[in-house]
Length: 342
Image 1 (cartoon, one colour):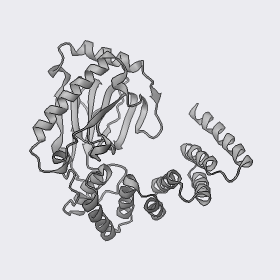
Image 2 (image 1 turned 120 degrees about the vertical axis):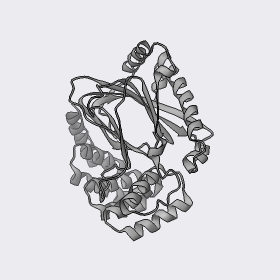
Image 3 (image 1 turned 180 degrees about the horizontal axis):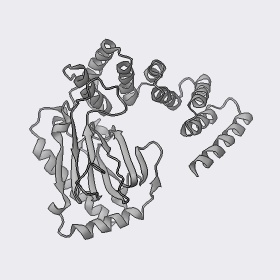
Image 4 (image 1 turned 90 degrees about the horizontal axis):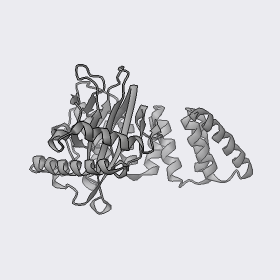
């Protein structure tokens, strides 16, 4: 169905371009559709036409850079990330320099960013990983050892009948707008809602209050830690959450939450803990960063029903695929600083 819709979209955009060949967003939308169909060379050409018409088209510039990056064309990606600028692009420029083994330039740029912007979550994740790989001190002050800030609790600490509570949460979530493998997300072979799950009903709202209380406990536990992750803890923030239901062979690729500060997961339906299937792996590695030393820090947590885990948003995490013919249901969430904190 997605393939057919995207093919129709491409036909529609070609027709629009014939009517107005100088309108950049026609080429931009065409490039997005081509990219989703994995027609990467065609997408590159279309993004190039966007930028010839409108050189300051930032979304087109960033998307083109990402296409080059995924194609391991790091020199071209670096050129466009540098022009795009922005928080994510600054980190992605560093990632290109690392992939190109231009370590001196990478370290020089990283030091400048470390002095000017101390809460770029993607830079924090990259810096922690690359510092381990190159056996250098981590210059980025946000959270040098994110695995040290892992916290585990359970819904049973907050509710008496967690089976009934979880059933009601799942029912409310299933009535929300579930999307199969949503675009620009890491969910594979699974469904995901928008990040407004705490508004889905009474029980999801109660869960938000439980998470808020758990975050207070988390802060108390780590408040004395001497890193910006704790010393600059946001005074004002929002909680955003979303429901994820994976089916057999489902998983989530290693990723971080660059808009968050603290991230977490509540496990509603889990798999048996006698294997790694369906477990969460937290580590310094993600986004296909080239690995020099495979012995980087990582932790595998085999969740039980009702588990609540909390960790820095700069910590990469992924779901290990599972072969059991069942569902794995969670609510993931972020503590997102409001604008005055950033």
